[in-house]
Amino acid sequence: MQPAQIDPRGPRFAAVLTTLVLAAALITGSRPLLAVQAAVFAAGALGGHRYAPYGLLYRTLVRPRLGPPAELEDARPPRFAQGVGLAFTLLAVLAALACLGPLATALTALALAAAFLNAAFDYCLGCEFYLLLHRARARTPGGGRA
Image (tube, rainbow, N blue to C red; front, side, top):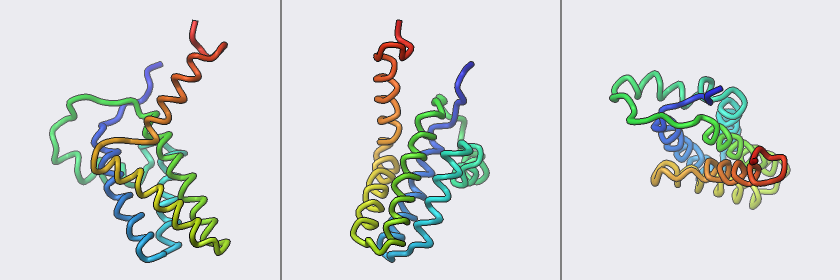
């Protein structure tokens, strides 16, 4: 079965919005804003790009104004990246609630750095990590490589 394919411009658009939200959360120290971003990541990681709020904005407001993408990409690496973002932001929310401000700040800053790399340079750390894991699994005995 062929994996789901997505417009690669969608995740980059989402990374721009994520960068803005995480920067605002970091500057203001807003736990609710951080929690909202965690929920956005959860929707994308658990439901896929069809249910990701920023993906919905892209498909509704941006994509109709653009030409078709030059090519499509596998949806699995960006979905995995959403899961990585969820882990970092969820841990940041929990750290903030546990009054571990420096840890919450560091986790938020790491998530922000990853989102910024994707937004500014089209380099998705979570996607690259997915591909490394996928290759490593294929090389292990019983991992799918003959």
